[in-house]
Image (cartoon, rainbow, N blue to C red; front, side, top):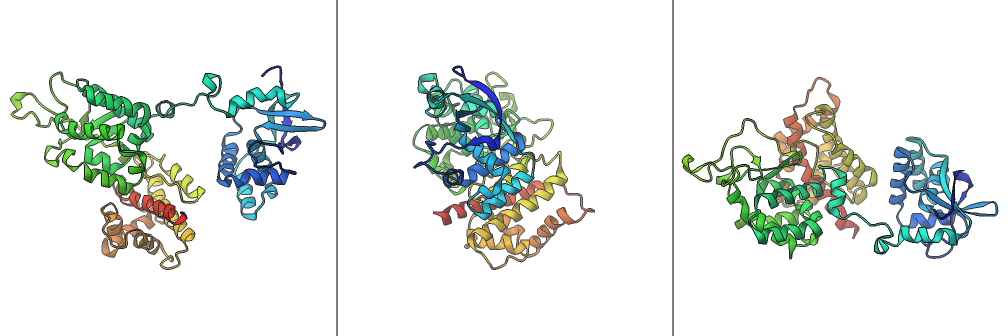
Length: 452
């Protein structure tokens, strides 16, 4: 880096930059510098702290320091160094709750004591590189960010955005003769891929459209001819007037499905088994047989049922942004659990995730009534979210939480954790995950509304 050398330094020897551009005004002490960084969002530093303890410092981005007398002033990497100082000495945090949180994270793993640094003789020597690091692409010489498709390709097949990319490829292949549709697909792939991912990340949307995923294979439950209207409408809308603000919430996506009802395939044409969304037979639609079968829309059979991807993992379509940091992290970790491979862990986590989300909401919103047991906590959340009991997406959650069937379901949830004689069925776990997933999403939406 422009003649600068590398050196290993102890965290305690590093001094935060009091003229850090992140600060609105110059700070005058370590405590002031840390407080200024925390003011911009303590959750960000807490997440950074947890990542450092779990994975260490990012070896692809070294800290840049300037030697100033006996001091090593941090020119680049002040957030990382501040986080390390908080992990090594939580009392530097300005409030007791933050001190406890940083202490808990520090106790959960290994906190680095030394860091690899690049040493500059003065600010000018490092300025060029720091500017490139923080001021965008700079016509290609700076950091060129990945677009959503590139992020998705790196991240793997499980993300909604990557599933959206896979769907665009399958649609382009299946409807290669439809120039207008291909134009809309290209627009969505380049600029609206995350919007498509938001739509097909919703199990209800996938179910009504009749599509699912088996790894990187798109499956359809309808013949090509019956699928074309909704596929064309969806890509046309996403390429045009339907922005993310119109499909952000579950309720908005349900409203969209109602608007396109005439384009959705009718249940009468649903195939007995899902089939691959591709031109597997030249001249024939997916799921359609030859004319000798008597109907161009007659379904063909497959040897076994393919389970849609959203049934394989817990709460796969749920994303929580307004619950507490730890609650959202527990959910994200639970979503990695394969129901078929780890049914016992999955069963336990269904109960735990539902409980901590409704408890988190009760604490944040000050609910005091009906908090003594799980049934009461779930009931309190449902009454706050859907007092008229007219939200169809919550019908199973209501049914599983009330009267006779509710008592049985809640007893099952309890036994998943406390009864070692109970071997959970994967079908039970799947049913509960599907039933309570919408409740978790609605709780998060309610927290968002109350925080405004």
